Image (cartoon, rainbow, N blue to C red; front, side, top):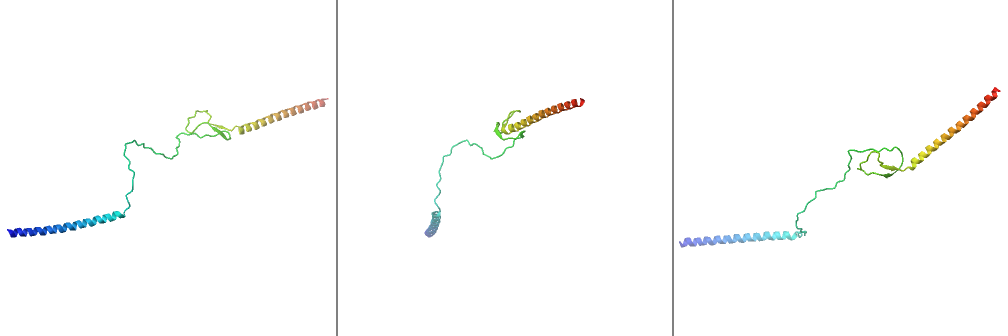
Length: 152
């Protein structure tokens, strides 16, 4: 049994030697891999520093700003009856306006000048009419006078 035991010990020794060689080989491979990683990491830039903030609960308002043009469903077109420059606007866009409420004021000087010119034209026509009546009365008087002269 010694031979079996001796042979068994020899096999165990060889097996142990094989395991030791394989372990050494595995360790050297692992060491070389980690050196490659260290060399690769040495070429990389350092990590970026960031500010760390504590998380807290808050209400988020869901809103947005938009640029747009709105068109009213109901609108009115204003057509002036007179010419002139607008000097005052009495209402704003979106105001409700009752019928007859003044909306704007037009500079009255042009209209006053137009009215003044019309009044002068009327007064001239009245004066011309009065002059024509006076001339007519004069002609009628001359006619009566000449008729009276004919009868004599």
